[in-house]
Length: 144
Image (cartoon, rainbow, N blue to C red; front, side, top):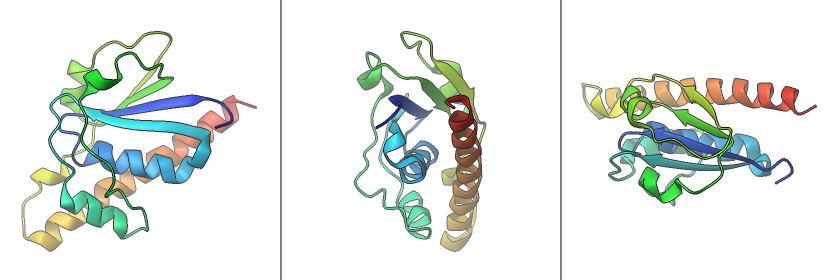
């Protein structure tokens, strides 16, 4: 990794939004960024999150839900919260940490049949991809 940027993406359950964001940022940034995701009450990676990511060629099957406490001593440059509960209960991290909050709907709470629920995951995935691309462009501009 060239610039040593470390990013943590937080959500409540670390099962959907933060997992998709971790996979997307790892895919988009390649070696430029070290990315982790965690939750304040971790559960398991949602199978529909895995399927939504497979639709765009990103494999997150190897990722696992982790508790934010596992990362309290790691030096992060940026912490991105992707749900309101995580933003409210996010612990402080040492050093100068850029905090971003993106309030995204929980696709796991979407009603409907499996196809409708998968579509909700895809909408959140696409929103995350747009935000992460913009963030990376901004970061690349700042480092020049």
